[in-house]
Amino acid sequence: DTGVSQNPRHKITKRGQNVTFRCDPISEHNRLYWYRQTLGQGPEFLTYFQNEAQLEKSRLLSDRFSAERPKGSFSTLEIQRTEQGDSAMYLCASSSRGRSYGYTFGSGTRLTVV
Amino acid sequence: AQRVTQPEKLLSVFKGAPVELKCNYSYSGSPELFWYVQYSRQRLQLLLRHISRESIKGFTADLNKGETSFHLKKPFAQEEDSAMYYCALSFNNAGNMLTFGGGTRLMVKP
Image 1 (cartoon, each protein chain N blue to C red):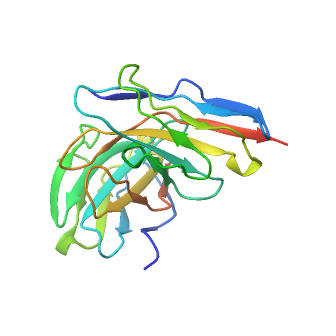
Image 2: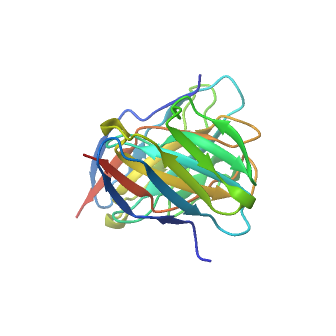
């Protein structure tokens, strides 16, 4: 286990379709985060899990978005009825330590909605 | 609400010149600040964190609470320093969520 793995790397979908992304964190990390990054911007926080519990959700996470982390291992992020504005890089990160420590990021999933 | 500002989208310097990437923040709580770097075709990675007061790849950053700044500095830039740099603020004690600045692209010319 050499890092955070995200699949797929790229996803092109038609507007209105549903998409699901997967994140496999570093195995011993109990904290998992999803961020979204659009062109020319820094990453924006979406949601946070500690083990299997989803403890925080951003206002950016509309009701079309849902995230899960069953059994506290991998996580999925689903977007229903995709819109062109959902086109972005979706980043997953994990951490095992407290506030003073940083994350390990995955390579991201680039979503293009056409 | 917390906010991180990186005023320069692009910073271009010659090899061997000093570098300062600016970061200003606003946050009512006790700040925890980080610099992340993204080299071409690589994932975002942690460069340094203010709590450790460390120097990584010759870069240092000092938290100035009076000026609410956390500028990243290096005395002599190298071509391999060319990358996107993001300043980030931890805004939640329990969850360690981060607010990122918009990023600065550093280009080091030969």
